[in-house]
Amino acid sequence: PLPQPPAQEKAKQPPEPPLPRQNAKVTPPSPPRVIADKTRTLEFVRVGMLGEGGFARVYEVKDRWGVRAACKVVTKLSLKTKKAKTKLYAEIKIHRSLEHPNIVRFQDCFEDDENVYMTLELCHNGSLMDMLRRRRRFTEPEARFFMVQLIGACQYMHTHQVIHRDLKLGNIFLDQGMNVKVGDFGLAALIENPGERKKTICGTPNYIAPEVLFDTANGHSFEVDTWSIGVILYTLVVGRPPFQTKDVKAIYKRIRDNEYEFPADKLVSFEEIVDHAFFTRGIVPDKIPTSAHDAAPSFS
Ligand code: ADP
Image (cartoon, rainbow, N blue to C red; front, side):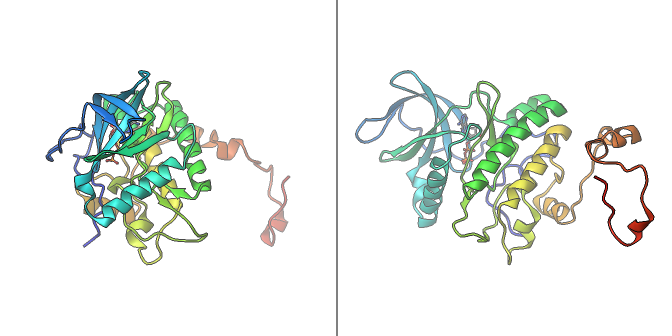
């Protein structure tokens, strides 16, 4: 049997289009209306609920000056094991080390007796997943806009030795100006030695790179984010992820076999093919010399 990764959000959803998140699990008690650290240096008032993930609830809060932020709340009841604590510390350590215009800004981290709190830059316009639900799919100019910012964020993370490992529409948030803000570093990994490979199987089924699932001996590295970015582009313009099917095992089989299709309206004509940058941006020689039998000719 294939390994089951922890984050199953997409697997629980029916094929297309995805439905709003269903919250079946029992929710722990709400955090206090006034959230503060022990010394009351930091103090926030809870003003609304923003969302819920696998490990945390996220609230909209206001500081003393009325400045709004997002506050990610992790109940200490979920931090009983050493493993859970290590995971949360890793998320905090990685996220607070990153500073980029297209990454959700990590502001502060503090605790009270019940919870650990992380205050984050507020993303007023939800996630690309929320937007796709309303739009069905995006235009190519929109897709290019989001992709350029996402790739910028990813390039920054990778030069800082961070692999996100859970890039997906639901973790790409939008600020007031509809700019991309990559969030949720709960599965991120820090590559501390050059050439180091990670072995933990994690991610969200639709977006997992094949080497994470099928090359567990060799492990995986930065390229898993590149794979997810490809899945994201396809999803933005087609409206559903390329390997989506009814159950997780079938998704994994399709990823292994690289089995995906383009919808009929994405198939291109010969005119569009010769108009592509591959032809228009490179040299098309007038003729090929016969010397090309033995050596590559020079065309510059
Ligand atoms: P988890 O790590 O538990 O999956 P996430 O970080 O993905 O939690 O957050 C869960 C939900 O909270 C998101 O899907 C989103 O709706 C909301 N959310 C998270 N961070 C922000 C933010 N910075 N601004 C606005 N909403 C947010």
